[in-house]
Amino acid sequence: MANDSRPTAAQAWQMMLEGNGRWQRDEREDPRRSAEERAAAVAGQTPAAMILSCSDSRVPAELVFDLGLGDLFVVRTAGQVVDDAVLGTLAFGAGALGIPLLVVLGHSQCGAVKAAVSVAAGQPAPAPSTLGALVGDIVPVCEGEGEGAVAGAVDANVRRVVAQLTSDPSLSGAVCNDHLTIIGARYDLETGAVLEV
Image 1 (cartoon, rainbow, N blue to C red):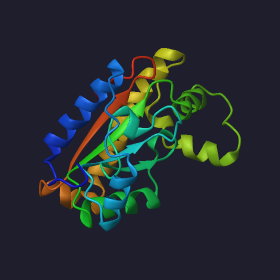
Image 2: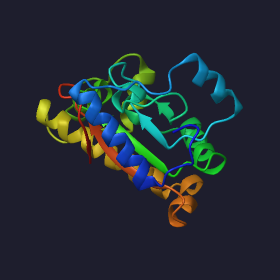
Image 3: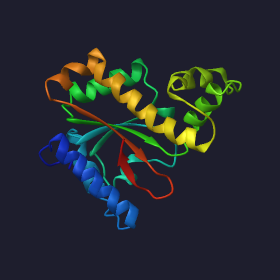
Image 4: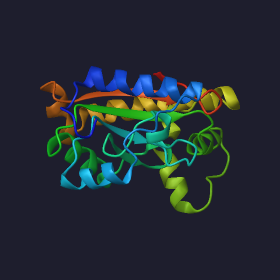
């Protein structure tokens, strides 16, 4: 995709879902990963989509969607928590690079969400204190305790981040003008499936 004309948001999402299907079936194509394609990418980038995902090492976007060099513009933070650096990066992708799709990708068994669920249930904030500040953004969407509460909070956190990004002035203009579509999704660690939230 890096050297082709850019797809629409709907086409980019379909391409990603097709790649995820290959990932689930262990029929990966591993596209655009050769030295020759790396050299061709030096001239510039035209990613099909941006992804804001968790920094969890088990959720590498290019593998999960069976895509390659130049296909995705990826930002990763624990629990997909948004700060000024994340907003600036996503605004650059939408504005300067004209990327039409932003996927907020949560995942099952997210450690940041588990910590937030514990804090919401009255447990002490996790150490170090900076982690406590990070999970503080997630705590308001947490209800209950246990694995069911974590699963629900993963999806609620994705929806929270989508709403936050959609209304942020750095991205809302692109959304209102139909230059950027923002969707939420969840990756299941056990099955490898990505489902829209």
